[in-house]
Image: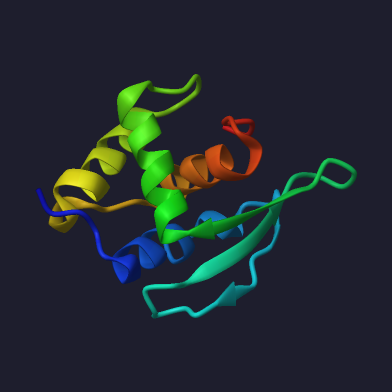
Length: 114
């Protein structure tokens, strides 16, 4: 078992293009490139915004939740990439859509926009 590193996880979540979707309002990052990185991610349409702090530990917790009990609206790609993130880091290849789904679970508690 080889879990993704903090840097790999940051790159997959913040660098895969998920934040290009219109529902992501802001994502200021602190400590990018360090094991203690964190992003204050705000999303949702005006009047419905929510903010969550996204960290390495938060991403791994969400990925474990996805592999344990696939949430409604989750794609097969999300489930596959979450498994890779936890168990086979070298195979991990989140794209914009799958990283967006995981970030939605973190910020909103469910996949809203599909």
